[in-house]
Image (cartoon, rainbow, N blue to C red; front, side):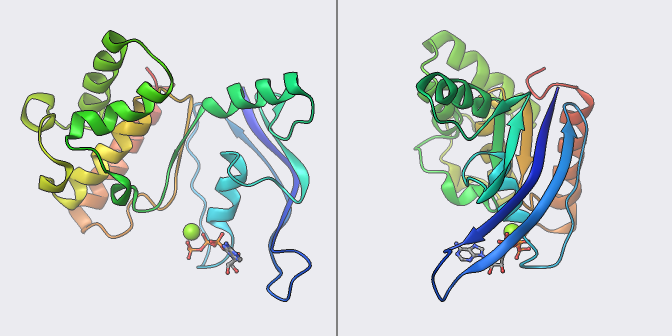
Length: 202
Ligand SMILES: Nc1ncnc2c1ncn2[C@@H]1O[C@H](COP(=O)(O)OP(=O)(O)OP(=O)(O)O)[C@@H](O)[C@H]1O
Ligand SMILES: [Mg+2]
C-alpha cells in the first residue's frame, strides 16, 4: 500500500533554450496512512515532484507506481488501470481557494463527486461529510457564496472539495501559504486529524 517513485527525473521544455531539469533520479516510497512533508527552497522542485505523483506531469525518465500500478501506460487496459490509480490521489494545489467558482460552497464541494458520476444522494452525503471534516458548518455555510468566506474558510472549502472525492492519498502543495498564524495552525491541525483517521475517506 504505497506510492513509489523510481529514479524519477523531469525536465521542463527539453531541447529548447528554456530547458530546465527540475528533478534528478528521485527515489522514494510513500506509505499509505503516513504523513510526509517535503521541504526545500523556492525552485527546488517540490511542486514538480508532487505533480509527478498526482499524474499531472509524466516523468521524463523513471516511473511512478501507485499501489503497484504504473501511471505511465501504453495499452488501453493499462491506461484504464492508471486512471483508476490516479483517482486514489487527491491533489490540493497551492492557493486552492482561487479555484472556487460555484455559486455556493455546497455546489463547489459537490463538483468533484459529480464529475465522478455519483448518485445525487451519495453526492449530498459526501458534501456534508467533507464540510464536517474541515469544520465548516453545512447549515451555516453550505448555501453561502465562497466569496463570503474568510481566507482560511475558503481554503477549507477547497480542501473539502478534494476530500469529497474520497481519495486514499492526499497531497497538498503549500497548504498554509498566505494564511495568518492562526489559520496556519488550524490547517495543520486539520491535516493531522485527517491523517490520524488513517484513510482520508474514513
Ligand atoms: N512550467 C515550467 N516551465 C519551465 N520551468 C519550470 C516550470 N515550472 C517550474 N519550472 C522550473 O522548475 C524548477 C522547480 O520548480 P518547482 O515549481 O517545482 O519548485 P518549488 O520547489 O515548488 O518552488 P516554490 O517553493 O517556489 O513553490 C524551477 O527551477 C522552476 O523555474
Ligand atoms: Mg511550489
